[in-house]
Amino acid sequence: MSKAIVLDKNLKANGEVELPKALADIDPHNLYLYVKSYQAALRANTAHTKTRSDVSGGGKKPYSQKGGGRARAGSTRTPVRVGGGVAHGPKANRNYFQKVNKKQKRLALLFAINEKAENGKLFVVDNITIESGKTKDAAKFIKDLGVRDALVVKEMIDEKSFYAFRNEPNSYLIEANELNGYTATAFQAIVIEKSVFEALTKED
Image 1 (cartoon, rainbow, N blue to C red):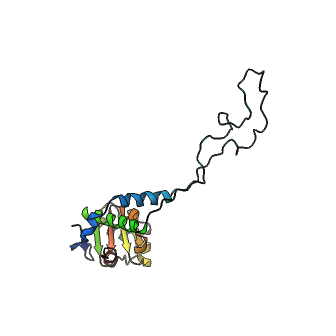
Image 2: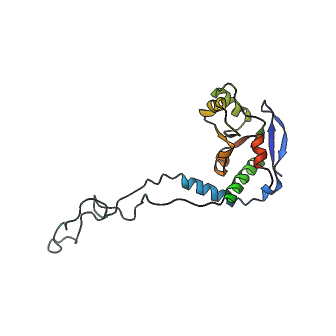
Image 3: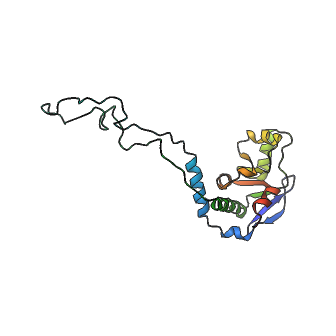
């Protein structure tokens, strides 16, 4: 059974808390589908080319059909000519949306959380607050965890903590309602407030 590491106010290990056993049985394919859908939604969809019918010009036949010794041509805007259209190029009207059910989204998040716990990278703290509001203190907070980078999850972001983590390159501060399967997998570790953790792992 996976366990999250409980930290005291000095970020020292102060025990462990078990995650529900059912989390270990979640199919990882749920996370795959969610991450795939999330990344697809991030696409700008700006790649666009013009076909021969979109390019300006080319209405007049460039030269006679016969007698010139050249291959016949009806337009100067065919894909084989410089200045012509593009054959089979991308269009900006493509829809990249991939539907993922609500239940699958939740399963994806729970699988990601459980995976972090299995790797010893899920930390639970009573309250996450940087009273000084300074980035150097936020950086020390992450460094003391001994991880490369971390997702910091608060129930509600206070002003001081927002300013402290805003320019800290190795962490990302979010509120509980922003947590999803993609953000949970994007960082090496997760630091989560106890109230958020309990609500997240509460068995139905």
